[in-house]
Length: 179
Length: 437
Image (cartoon, rainbow over all chains, first blue to last red; front, side, top):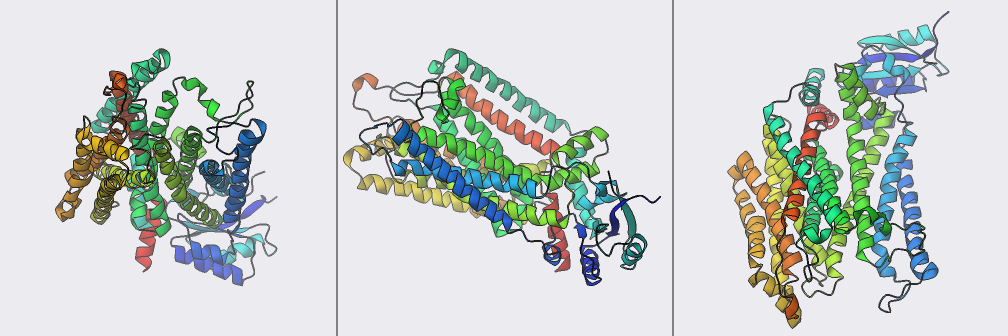
């Protein structure tokens, strides 16, 4: 019985080689791809069709909600629930409510962006099949990894392996799935 | 590429991973640790005995508590603003100084936060500024700057620490992967949250990081203005000025930049990171400190012009600050924060470690005297003979201030000991770009 695979992974020494490998795999029709590098590669992200436009939307919507809640709270508490007359100023003294409304809008936007980032990336996840690959610790230092996932419709252990080997990587390894 | 990238990663990553760290670090840590103990002692004494142990009294209701609060916030804001601008401009300098500019900002906010909480008198009731359904059914008074301040400090602390941490995640993963001992690997591994460095992760990470850097810009302008509003919304003649927020923002920036310069020079010298924080970086930082000192100088002139145009009472209050019992503070501020940085016109001074340390400390000290001068000197003109007195800090206040300096230094030392002070992934990125262009 063969072991169930997460995918097959090739290791490269330069980002250029990684980019070429991704392009070749896309030409060959593979769709379930993942690439790992020690620093951001924005061209490659475009190549893989990754769109991050949800990030500013999360921030914007959170800022609207946060500022709405903050202004509403101040208005309701100081003008409706417990009207407080300070030196005859209007109960809804909006200029005085603005500073904390703006600050809380930023608080919501900032916290939502970074917490949302973790949710979108499904982190924290301390255990992942790729960590089992020998030498993968260099993905955070100076090596570039390219993985074709086993749920790709074209995936077929032997053929995919020889496809990757044809791209002249430093080494090709199988990534066992973890149950 | 590989071997070069490896070299960067190892120099920076070896710093936190090494077992021995040298006696200079230990001496510095013991000194700052002793100051942290002093901080604990003064905080316990003010909690048990009350604010009577401080030298504050009518009319000087604010003393060291607000002086040091405003000063630390200035450092935090200046450092944050600097870090955010570097990220947004994608400036090369960001690789070298961004991480510890964020660290400086975070530790300064922590120090700043201590003062307003303890100056409440009953610090354990600080949560009364938060609108929660209390049994006595009274809500906070949101027209008060005290409540604005509550939101501003807590937001600043949360957003700064999130930004700092999210920037650290990929580098924590590098430390996890390079650690030799299993326990160390586990600790960094947990904080790295399982970062794998997939291209998709990077794309989202960079987008989110830049977005929060954009948010920091309005945040610190509002935060520093909120500090200034605490003065501006009172009826005290010297404080009740619309120019107050501008003064605090600009001088706070000068102070933050000078502390970043100080820390950069010290780290470069102490950790031998000369190749990554190169002469050009330090030179540029020096020019920024000089430029911000000139802006501060302009604002001091503006203060005089505003006073000349103001009514007689405001005029008298401002000029008393410059000529009265506390005139020394005002002039010391000018010498230290505006005149001494002029040294940086000289190229040799910008590139020298000693001059960097000297000017960095000098601007920090100068702005501290400026805050002292505004807070105490601004209250000096009074027309009730029964409260004609002067303010001087007591030992409990001095100890509190020294204690926060110790806390700041201790946090920075721990940061330099256990975390990469330079963004390793940005450095790898830069070297790659240089090589391919």
